[in-house]
Length: 247
Ligand SMILES: Cc1cc2nc3c(=O)[nH]c(=O)nc-3n(C[C@H](O)[C@H](O)[C@H](O)COP(=O)(O)O)c2cc1C
Image 1 (cartoon, protein in one colour):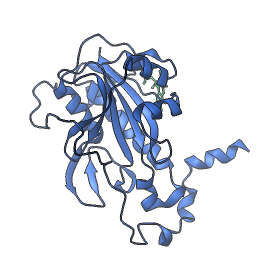
Image 2 (image 1 turned 90 degrees about the vertical axis):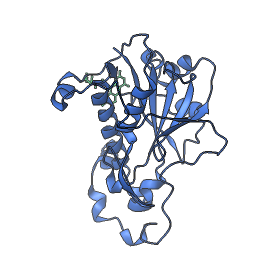
Image 3 (image 1 turned 60 degrees about the vertical axis):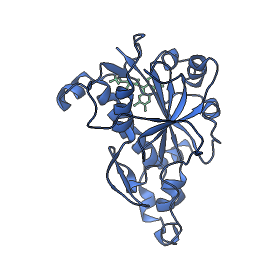
Image 4 (image 1 turned 90 degrees about the horizontal axis):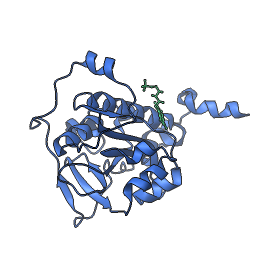
């Protein structure tokens, strides 16, 4: 019986998807590539690629060889420039964009990019402690929520894995599945999980260039994580987390 769940990981549905019935084929406009925010929401400009001064040149080979999951961090802050770099390597824009495709620094099935990036910023130079969301289109952060005891909330969201609240910044990725459904209908969710893996791997490797470390977290409290981000858990929900701190 439980073997049925394994089907989620298979690509058998390619033979059964009726592409003529997808929203894309029916000429329905694609969902927005970036979740909108209110014009009055506070935004923070990030440092752009090309203006970074303090990102070390690390070879791909060295970054891959040194990468490991790191769950213990120093008390050091990270610079806004370093955070800008980490956000760009995980979801930043690359090249041309249109209503249907916006190329990023990471691959995505059908170029649908069904993820949003939130951060719980505990110790980032120049920005108050709060939850923010990354806006890839303008390379900005928008403030989402200020909570009392943000560290405690993140620890609880990570099912008491305390390093989630002891980082300089904890990444929380959500998915808006409608972006993927528009092209692939409701049968092909595994690609969203595959996409998230690429994103987190880029984070691991980029951390090696700023003297930081990270650790993927998939063991989290779904409903609690969604609640601290203020998302509905249906049209958008948490899919992955990764605390980052200096090591
Ligand atoms: C999808 C995924 C989920 C993970 N979830 C957790 C987690 O919830 N907590 C944790 O401490 N480590 C988690 N890890 C980290 C793994 O434990 C770690 O990658 C593994 O032990 C291998 O160690 P390495 O990354 O140092 O090579 C996760 C890793 C992946 C890829």
